[in-house]
Structures are given as structure tokens and as C-alpha cells.
Length: 146
Image (cartoon, rainbow, N blue to C red):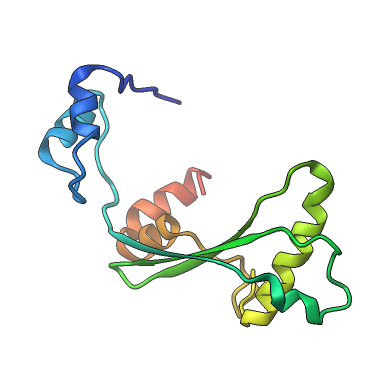
């Protein structure tokens, strides 16, 4: 089931404008009014970098046009870290080159899409639920939501 909240009213807009890092009581009341309850609360610190593409010049298999890359690393207050590499392309023809250059950067940085056990890297919410809310996580697995 999908629920859509109208966050365009004045009450919602004043709450959204609040730059407080923690979800305040007013926001929680607004969400509860719509039947939503929190099952995961954690903080993330993101750092981001724009990549100097000169690393790609040493690889003969590198595409002739190297899209600019951005790297974001997220660390959570429960000890999980995850990163992403993003390339912006102007059309579908650039997607394969972008994938290739991302893999080259990953190799240069010594990071992999898969963990040592062969699984894909896990996202923050997935790890939070598995480690901090195992009963909730298992219920989602049993319901085939994950």
C-alpha cells in the first residue's frame, strides 16, 4: 500500500523549514496523525568529493570522454559506512562509459560493489534494521518486503 501525505499546507511547510537535525515532536505528531510510526531513527554524516579524472588517463581501456564523477561517503551513528559514486551523463549513449569509469575509480580506490562474502554492499536502513531491529527485519524478510 502506498500513502501520500500532503506536505503543502502551512503547518507542514513551517515544520519542513525547521533546520533542526532531529525529528521534532511536531513532525512526529504530524506523521502519527497520518498513521505513520517510526521504526528506525539514526543520524548520517555525509562527505562528498568531486573526482579529478586524471586517474583514468593511465588506463588504456578508459573511454575517450570521461564524465565528471562525484563520490559521497555516509557514516552512521550506529557504525555503518557506505559510499556511492555518481556520474552525470547527457544521454543514454554515455551510460556504458560512465559505468566503465566508475569501475576504474573503484579499482583505483580499492573498493568493490560486493563485500568479501560476495553480497552487494548494504544500504544504511537495511543494515540498521538487521543489526538494531532484528525482529522487524525478520518480519520484513518473512513478508518478502526485503
